[in-house]
Amino acid sequence: MNKSGKNISQAIIKRLPRYYRFLGELKAEGVERISSGELSGMMNATASQIRQDLNNFGGFGQQGYGYNVDYLYEEIGKILHINTSHKMVMIGAGNLGSAICGYKSFPRYGFNIIAVFDIDPKKIGTYVHGIQVHSMDELEDFLEEHGVEIVIVAIPTDNAAGVMKRLEKTHIKGVWNFAHIDYDMPEGIVMESVHLSESLMILNYKIANAEGAGRK
Amino acid sequence: MNKSGKNISQAIIKRLPRYYRFLGELKAEGVERISSGELSGMMNATASQIRQDLNNFGGFGQQGYGYNVDYLYEEIGKILHINTSHKMVMIGAGNLGSAICGYKSFPRYGFNIIAVFDIDPKKIGTYVHGIQVHSMDELEDFLEEHGVEIVIVAIPTDNAAGVMKRLEKTHIKGVWNFAHIDYDMPEGIVMESVHLSESLMILNYKIANAEGAGRK
DNA sequence: TAGATTGTTAATCGATTAACAATC
DNA sequence: TAGATTGTTAATCGATTAACAATC
Image 1 (tube, each protein chain N blue to C red):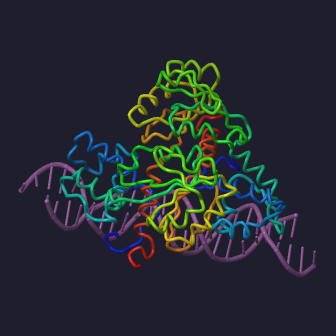
Image 2 (image 1 turned 90 degrees about the vertical axis):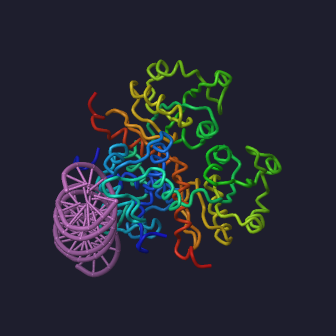
Image 3 (image 1 turned 135 degrees about the vertical axis):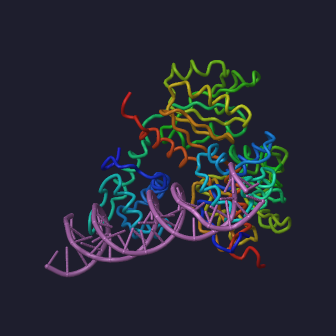
């Protein structure tokens, strides 16, 4: 899990994928080694924070040398459990659900959406980016049968709580939620939400309160 | 701006839209007043934090009574500058861009996407959820002419840096970015990013390291 | 008035940054 | 070896929580 069994803070977890992205870019550019100081310049973070963060998981660097890019990329990938296969299904064949089904880079990281579910009878049996749309009636059986790990929820708010209630009784491990809802999943099921409209509101706040927003 | 001109932390800003959402729900249910204690129960936050957060912007409550739901909803809406009209354009007529153009709730909050831009000549002149697709050649002129405030960027990573470079020379106020890129915008342009794949990686990490993930 | 609950100050907790000894 | 840079401990900073006087 991590170096000493100690708990990793949310703040650190959120930074891990960003480290992974930057290291991936360095790797692609053929950079062999990097110091925390150099990374800090690229990432708008202190070198100290980078070293602290990484040391929660292990001593990946070498004094006097820095970090080997390929190795560190690999190790963070392991921490994030990337490149092991993850079975997912999408609930909701609307605009957003379809768009996510079309994400080209997901399979590359081992994230495979193997089915879509929708309540609209007209959509059932059709295909979304090559993935078949099933009836919501089949949901629980399908999840069980295929050992689905992650369910993506991309449906309107009104139906969200009902779907969550169904999901909490299944053996899935995580919900990736795009509905405008908070929901307390039971222990054993993790939920990560993307609240798009909240993100837009934050942007809006920042625009209104930007340095010098009053001037000009 | 805020009560005393003091700086509002990122942590607080991120919570504001969530308060707004919960208050909107209470309002819809016809709840008239709520105490920080009750809200705290609903929102998984301490009553103390709620009162602290709100008091950065003003004394919206009343001792012995709590907060009037309608009034507080209204006030947070003002803080977030919701319900004033915001002109936006979308860059990228792909799956994600189209999906966001189809978001029904945006116009309700004053967010209006008035044009889409794409590099694909085949898409130019077509419509995405009723919004016309323009050539990228017209971008700068269009932004200037219509006084566009926010640009949504939903394009592949490869093209993102080039587009950001063009945007930083315009008079827009904010970028809502879905591309897998970080970019330092000049002062006066705010950027808020939604990194979907990072969110999925975080979910993945949490699943792997969930309490009892090792057991069963 | 008495009870409730805010607004706000003080205490605590946690996360970030700085410093430096260890070591490649 | 000397120089560089990590890993890690200590210091600082900021955010959260607790406490309570103010007041409706």
